[in-house]
Length: 183
Image 1 (cartoon, rainbow, N blue to C red):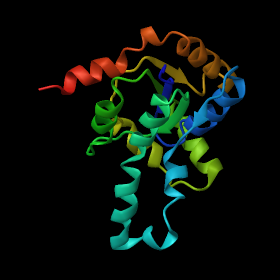
Image 2 (tube, rainbow, N blue to C red; image 1 turned 180 degrees about the vertical axis):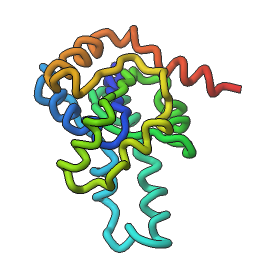
Image 3 (cartoon, helix red, strand yellow; image 1 turned 90 degrees about the horizontal axis):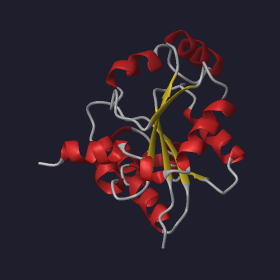
């Protein structure tokens, strides 16, 4: 069975990942299923989302990429918005799990001023959260494609990504990252 393509969107908070994921679904001529941390987090019973029980949710969320791999292995195309930051093993775990799958690794970028404006407009983010993530986003430079969700419309970003998604043989970022973590 042919593995489904995984469009992995990585960028700081408010960079447009979720909006872009929805636009990719809207514009794609084939079904793309969105799998994200918020959806997984909503599966956790509310009473385990706080304090010492937060570990229960973290342990569950850390397994999300197993589900991503499973769906890809079953032939489903996915878009997965996420944030990989220094200090954790999420990126390494993700690369280890998905390096043999067709992963298009997309950096969603946005100027700092626009990030600030979006945070204020959204009202559900701490002021400066996105800006504080800029220097600790990992990786800083190993992507298949970077899209600026401020310079281009979401439609234009989705077009660029979908065009590249049609050539999985050109996906190389995860192969590079996999090689970098090998002993």
